[in-house]
Length: 336
Image (cartoon, rainbow, N blue to C red; front, side, top):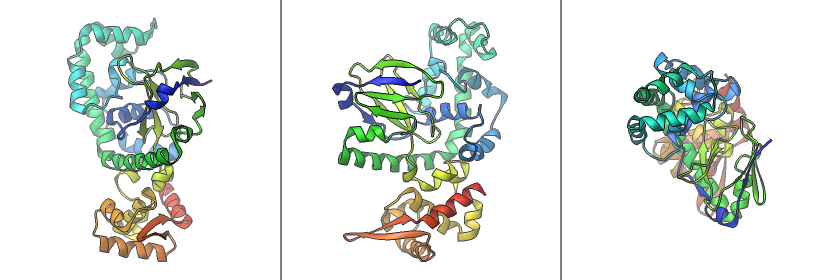
């Protein structure tokens, strides 16, 4: 069963790539991941660290954002607004809106979670939900956000080039080939909940949002007052190290300890940067690794001589890339 998005020529003309990952959307997906145990290699390191920040006051989020199925509308976290703006909107939400969203979400169910029942009886408690969102963001997402932004930016650059070279149809085909397939004029989307439906976008187009935590099934929504959107996983080729370590806490914060012990911290970071930014120049490598160009060149030479990276020339430019041996090393250290 799939969700079938019917795209007209007008929809295709209005397809957009989001500028980057959305912090609160990543949080929403992350909360779902904390409630189930699939993809252990990819996310267990992050789950273990996130568990250190679990507090009883966060329980409403786990009630209102289930592992599968829709979350309550007032917890829609797909918007581009800042964290503070989103939280302020939630705190000032009219009571009738809170109750309406809860009733629509419940859809006649009698076994409402405790947090939902309390909110229905006292909508002013939404301010505590807003505080829970802030606390969860600080514990689950904020520590890794600089690295998430980095890999999402690299992915966007690669896809913009793909769009320029090959057009929108290839962009759609390669968003997430396992779960998103393009058969003109229909985009078939396999969701985690197995939703089966036909949706016509009515000329509003589609916003494509990259996601690190949404590495498998896509999330989709078509808000009444905004553009329909869908998530896609940050492409593995944009960050080969995270392809095997799965953008877990280890690769999102620093090089794995075993890799640092083998290569030294700076050289390990240089290897990860080359993995995440294939075909980067020496100056780009230095900027991403936050070292001088001379140091970047020296470390890249050592890695190349060890067979962990390769070097190609494109005109006057020198481009660095990961070798099969380098990828194998990152795979083994990610599992260590």
